[in-house]
Image (cartoon, rainbow, N blue to C red; front, top):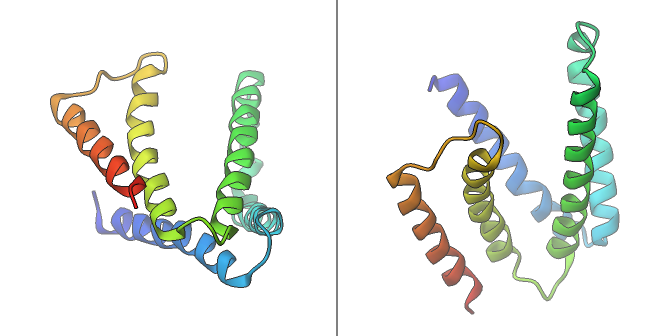
Amino acid sequence: MTSGVILSAVFVALAFAAWPLLGRESRATGAWMSVVVMAGSALTVALLAVPQLGATLPTGRAWWLLGTAALANGGAVYVYASKAADPTVPTAAFLVLVSVLQVTAVALLAWALPGGQVPTGRQAAGFVCAAAAVYLLTKG
């Protein structure tokens, strides 16, 4: 990976980690947090993507898949923001737990999708470590 890709990953990780913490600090409800963050995200993405949107339009299948992804992501953001705003939920542990589960889910979904890659021995070991991390993170 190039340094530019690594710096991009650092930026994304920091932004994804910061918004639920900033939202919790705002003391807004999870509903408001998710609506404001998603609306601001949609506006920012639209402004950044304008030069590239006219090149090609997605196909019918792509619209269906992207719509499904949007619905799933919207539901997940709502739940994520609701838990981040809930004072009874330990925010740091919850956010790390989501991150660990997300890493595991990516590998499993990549395997389950058509033409998917079978997990390697290292990935299988990673799943075991992730399971241990999930167990440890959920125990007070």
